[in-house]
Length: 438
Image 1 (tube, rainbow, N blue to C red):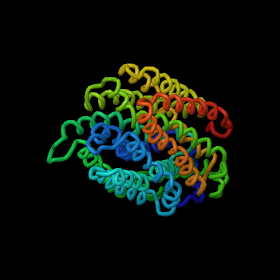
Image 2: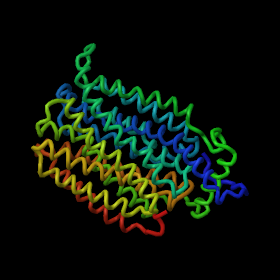
Image 3: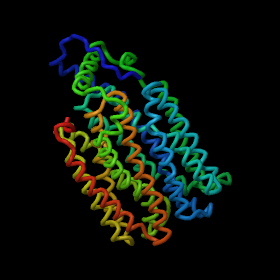
Image 4: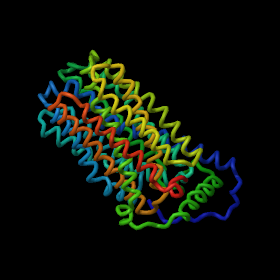
């Protein structure tokens, strides 16, 4: 998909507010829910191993360290192929490449039901990361082709609401599958879990290729006036930013800061997604269905906070405090949860605060790169920041697994991650206000 400057029609649309409302309402409903549903499927296939673990470890004889390393190897594959995948997407187009990503990750996620050894578990998780690499940065890049900076916070929030929704709906669903399907046709519940939850990803991948508009010109649902308005709005954004070379994506310190900020978010998210089921079981939760239901609470709150923060950030044209304050709440929730390991109620309340804070910060963080990058550097910069961030995914899985095998607790780990989030608050406020507050 080309990122060359758009030709802006010489039509007077400056004060045509009804056209703008009609245009962005139409684009929002056409793109955001569908891409959000795809993100829902992606995240569900990424983290359902946290619920599957409740049966899988005993069934296969895996240790906590084996589980943590296997869950974490997803992020190694993801990090290695993130930037190349997004550069390919820019060349071949979002519709084809996102469809390819979804079909291959769905197939690989389904194959997890057949693993029997640690080596097989490691391999399929690594390949799942390779397959999914590029989806999130690719979708974020694609949205920059359709929405200007001033509207980016809320549209990214609508897209990213798929992440907490995947746990809000997916956790109880996964717990139900784990219990109800256990033993059906000679398969364990965890095997049915991977097989059944992989199917939507494959189906959505096919629908992406059919449904997703390839370019502005291919958007037949837009009128000529709306198309002209869209080209004008996107063109104004691009004229305000210089074209950037690929190397600048890696050299720009703001890209590194965005990567670290999302690393903080993922440290929190994955600590909760991969380890909250274990924490609840150790605190006395009775079965997989109850654990799945309890995990819906933090994610229900997160859904609300994602939407509210994205809208508020756009309304006030403010990004820094909309990142720093949620990360502060998240840090408090993580650190405090370490001091109540035996209380189901305390774990749910504190991790709900942590999860909601991380979710609230995420869409605002991902509205930042397009404020200071464009062209090929935007594609590479978003992907590179994602790669940095996903180091948090590896740390929150392998490190906590290793720690639990040795101390029988994840308390020290979540305190460490909370301190990392406090540093993220400082870095968010250090971002240049005149650049990022668009």
